[in-house]
Image (cartoon, rainbow, N blue to C red; front, side, top):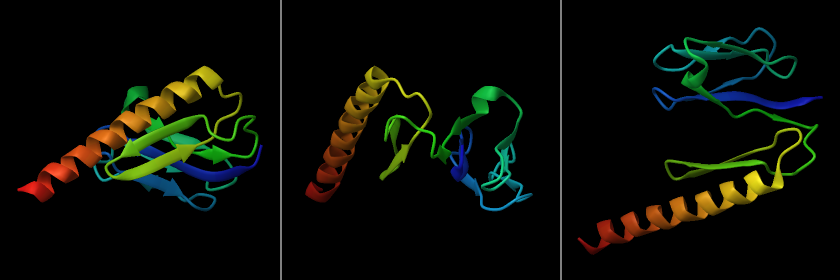
Length: 112
């Protein structure tokens, strides 16, 4: 497995942190989670396992996309080994619904 991107998203402060090189220990804004290792290894520091969401991408993924999420107005796509196609489709449906909600919010703001 080769790491393409080593990053996580803090579920507390919503900060996305990325470790870009070996021993690059990067904390989120609130300090609850951190990523380390760059493209050499994945190391996570956290208070609770539910404090972060994995955002890393590696080249061992059988499926091109197995995780899709809308964060703010940004589309986040990540690949994981052994992705389940049913999960991929469920995430795509969820993403489409979230994008529709964002579009509706923008339209309501422009009408005012």
